[in-house]
Length: 252
Ligand code: ADP
Ligand code: MG
Ligand code: MG
Image 1: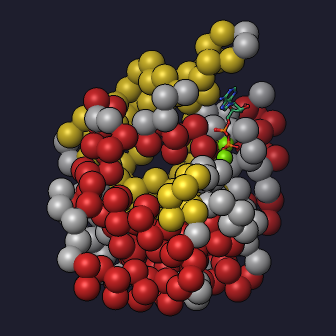
Image 2: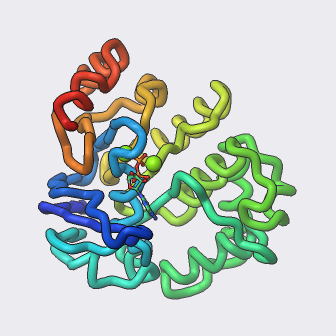
């Protein structure tokens, strides 16, 4: 059972006018078995939070801590974070020219486990994971994210989730650009990942739509680099009805 603990996290990003503080003290604990939704208006810093947990070099942590089961995540390299059991699906996944999905998945699995997966079971597992998200098996031979549609990128993320089996998954705008069928497939993938109750999920989204398929235990409203309100799933319904206006007015 794992716990991802974020305490008073402050993060700046380098801009043309110098460093700008984006995260202004974020505190959040995700315990195994829990799904937390972070919802907030555009530009409030949601992706910055995801990138900071991922260890993206553009983002500088100026204060606070992030730990996974007591281990200092901020001290870890990006690879070490993955080995420790963190999975981060990004809002804008990068293309990896010349690397096929198949090779990418196998290298990632090998890096995380410390040994290459057995070929026979691995191929079966990859095929099963692709079938589950209704992705053509030929997809495995394509280069990672090259010319992928929005839906294909997100399905590929679910395939990774399935195969890499992390402890905690951070999913940034997994619902963006998805039609209703893809949204269902992706949501079902996240729910399969969650089903044994030993995983943590941090689901970052701008829209409440995905929360009809993935029920969060906790909802956090994110405004101007901070959590402005916390609640249960009913908070998502309130946001659906009222939007973020009430928060953004008081945040300015
Ligand atoms: P969200 O995901 O909630 O829409 P982001 O985390 O992407 O918000 O961005 C938060 C704020 O930080 C925005 O004002 C954005 O312009 C700024 N920001 C994020 N990354 C950078 C960057 N690399 N350079 C300059 N500004 C950035
Ligand atoms: Mg934001
Ligand atoms: Mg974002």
